Amino acid sequence: MKFEPHPHRIVGPAGELLIPPEDPLTPRLIMLIEGECEGLGAARAAQKHDLTRQRYYQLLKRFRERGALALQGQKTGPKANYVRTEELERQVIRHRFLDPDASVAVIAQKLRQAGFAVSIRSVERVVEKYGLQKKTRSLPSRP
Image 1 (cartoon, rainbow, N blue to C red):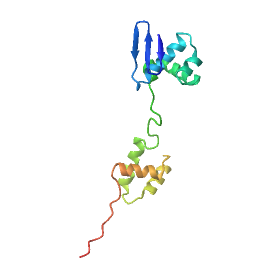
Image 2 (image 1 turned 60 degrees about the vertical axis):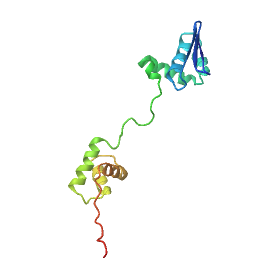
Image 3 (image 1 turned 90 degrees about the vertical axis):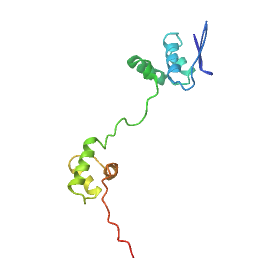
Image 4 (image 1 turned 180 degrees about the vertical axis):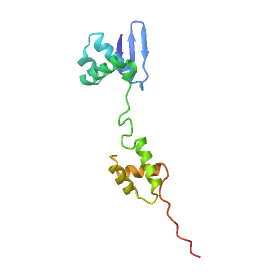
């Protein structure tokens, strides 16, 4: 068995299997097979697939822990909203209803005093999310 990166295909003694170009999983799995099973070694297998040896070992660890699906690309960035938690949102809503005239700066200050690490902008976002902005009186129309 042999993997050809351009075009992505696996070639064997009885034929070939084309790999869709948008498939990131199969080439990574083949790289691990070449490195671990066919004796190519980590450094050469990684180089052949335009990856670093460090990345090879990261993928190998993932594969050993969770199988082939772990080789798919992972979303980057935070997995959850660490500042605007459900509890913080409840507290902002509570403060808004207890004192509708309080500004977001005052609500943020009260929440900080209660032990929440929150910025004024985070409070503004919660207020906007739930439509809790203060109603402003419009001027009467002129005749």
